[in-house]
Image (cartoon, rainbow, N blue to C red; front, top):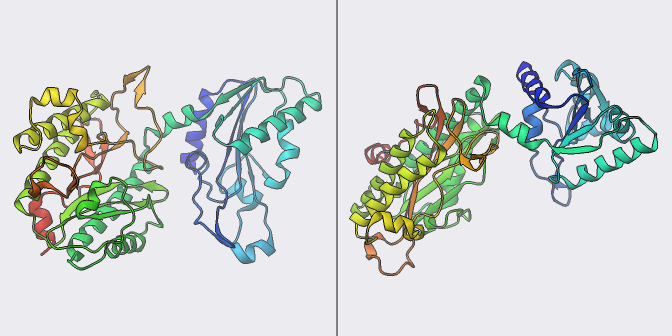
Length: 431
């Protein structure tokens, strides 16, 4: 739990004296009738507490002398409810295990919170992000005022930018979890290459991936898996996964496991029957060249946009060379002519969320990479079969290659390198 103490201390250091910070954890969400969705804790709440039960509220109180108190409101022990849903942490263990300075039954929060506002000037919370919490805070402030408490808060400040900047830089423990998620997911991708056969359904590959991740310790997936064969790969967020795999087609799999709430995000594209056609080979190697060049730009001091610039130049030059685009590559980039084939950016931050917290720009300038940041690098080319003016051999080819990359002091580390990526590695895996 020392990891979470460190994070809370870093947050408290950014808070003004005489302030209070409030976060609400996730609640159980109904799927239908009496069946619930699997519980997943709110990422910001989990980052500061490590607490993995629903219906909890985090409070960090800082008095006018700078003394900090961590308070947790959580469910109390309830023998009747615990018969159905399992043992609850309760208040005593919230202090013993999760190192709260004080813990209270969540049912009593409306009575206790107004008194915690006394002597505070600022309330930090996710401003406008949680309608119920917005209303609760206004009600607690009203109760404080009605009690005639002195020095109640008069300023509401969004806490998320403070937390998200902290989350952008991963600790050693976080990196341990992310490496684990990446390795498990990479090995699952390898198993798909070995298992894939014409005549299978896309969802059967999805099932293999899910099972491999769960069996290796990922208790959940980081996002809904994309298993897109043939022209389906040209739909970026295709998740139907209900078509038959056809010999001669490629299949694009964008899938990652989640280990201790930390995500992997890996994409591999490989031939259903284990061998690339010549056209597929040319497109694939172009995307791979761009991806490797993009990864090479991930190092301290480089700016975020540099990865996309390098990727874009290689892809557009390659498309011109293949005759898929015509003209000067610089002008084609300027005119966005490439966007019918490459519609997205080079990647995103990765961590507790797949598209993780953290700004990409500071004062409207692309931020520089620093050690501890983790991002994806994921160029692609998507030549949908309804695009006119393109040779038929290119149509229906969709390729994306995505890896998870850590910025290190001397450069970078590819966390997902265990997933085969070159044509030779992929074709060997299929044998």
